[in-house]
Image 1 (cartoon, rainbow over the protein chains, first blue to last red):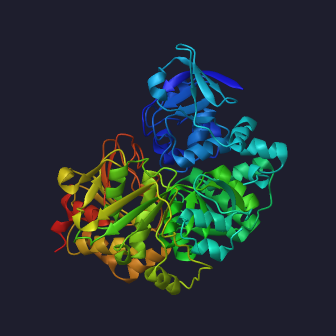
Image 2 (tube, each protein chain N blue to C red):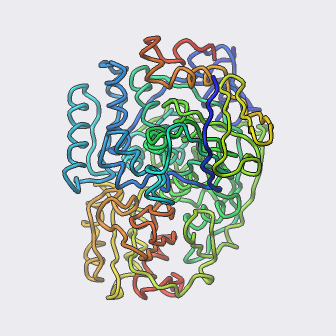
Image 3 (cartoon, each protein chain N blue to C red):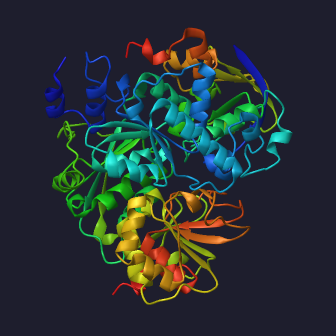
Length: 172
Length: 428
C-alpha cells in the first residue's frame, strides 16, 4: 500500500499544544470540528490550505507534551495522509497507530525533502521515496503487529474486523 | 520462569524490567529493555479532555461491557466546574458513562493528585489518558500515559502492550540551598538533556539526596519528567514512602527496587548545592535559564497551581512570601490547589487568608489556567510566570502570549514586584 502526497514541512519540537490548543479540543467530541484547529499554533488557516492526501514532514520530537489524541485526530481529519518525522514523542507515536494515522520515523528527512514536493510513503516496505531525487529512505522499523494495525486502519477498525484487540492474541 | 520473588531480587534488572515482567500476561519469561509485553493493568484513568473521546471510541467499537469498572477512574478536572455549555455537555457524557458502568467518578481534583492521594502504591501498573500520569512513579508505581483509544482498549480488556524502556539513572547528591526547590532540580535536568532527552525512557531518580525530598517534591519531579519525554519516572520506595503510605493507609503487595548491576543507557549526577532558582523561558521546557538572566522581565499574570506544583507545600511557600505583602496592582496572581483536599487544607491552615490579604485570587481545584481553558486565560502578547506544566505556544491562551515556568517561590516573589524576581530576596 503506497500513499503519494504533497509535503508540508515543519521544524523540530512541534508539540501537541501547537497542533491543537486545549480550549478548542475540550469543547467538542467531533473529529471534523477538531480538524478546524489543526496546526493552530503555527497557522490558524492550515485546515483550509491542506489538500486531502498531503503529508507532513517534520524534524525531531514531533507531538511532544500532552497525550491528547485530538492532535493526531485533527491531523488525520483535516486530510493529512501521513506524518514523517525525524522522531516522535512517545504518546503521539502510539496514538498514530491507535487511530490509523501513518507515522514513520526517518533520519534526516527534513534535509532530503522540500516543502511542497510530492513524496511516496510505502506502508508495506515501511519506507519513503522521493521521486525528485529517486531516493528511497528506510523508516525506523516497528513490530509487525503495529504495521498490521496501521494497515487495518487503527484500533476501531481492527476491533470491528476481528472483534478483539491486537494484544489479546499477541505472543509477547 | 523465575518466581515473582526471584524477579524482585534479581540484581541485573532495572525497575522497568521488573515492573513489566511482574505484570506480563504471559509470565513465561523475564522481559528486558526493548522487548514488547502484554501487561495487566491495575488502574486506567481518563479525564475530561481524553475521556469523552474514549467513550466515543467504545461506542464506535460497539463495546458496552468494561473489564472492571472499579479500576476505571474518570476524573473531571481540566475545566471544572464547566466553563461553558460545550464543556458541560462533555462532562455530562462522562457522568452518564460512569453511572451506567459503575466506574469511579471524581470531580474537582486534578487526576494525578487524586491518584497520589487515593491509589498510588509501589508496584502498581497505572495507565492514564494524560501525559502526566507518570507522576505516580513518585511512590514507586509504574505509571505512564497513553491516548484515548488505547485507554478505551484497556477499559475493555484490562490489558495493553508495552515496550520495555531503556533506563537512565540520575543520582541526586548534596543539599538544596535556600530558595531552590524540586522544580529547579527537574528544570535543570530538562535543560541539560532537552525536550526529547528522556523520550521512550525510564528515569530512575536516585542518590543520597533523595531521602531529603518530600513526597510532594518527588511528585513534582516525577510529574515534570514528562517534559523530557520520559515514559516513567520513579523514586524507589524508602522510609519516607512507607511512612506516607501508612498515613494514607495503603499497603503495597511488593516494592520494586532496581538491581545493583542493572544496565543503564545513561547516568547523570546532579549536585543540588550548585543549583540556583531556574526559569524555563518561552516557548519550550528545555529553554532553561538562571533566574539572573531573566530577572526584571515584566509580567501580567502569576499562576501557582497545576499537577506539577499545586500541592500544600507549594501553597505554603507561596504564602510565606506573600504574607504581609501585596500583589503588584498591575497584574493578577492566581492560586489554584491541585485537589479538594488541598483546597480545604489551605482554608483550614490560614493560607487563603494570606492569599486574599495579598490581593491574589484563590480558585477551586482544577487544571484551569495551566491548559488555558478557564480561570486565568492569557490574552494577546501577555506574559505569565507560572508553576504549571508547560510553556508551549498557545498553552495558556493566545498564541502570542509568553509563559515562563518556575517554582512556586519564584512565581510568588514575581507577583509582588510585577516582574520576574529571585525568590531569595524574600526568603531570609
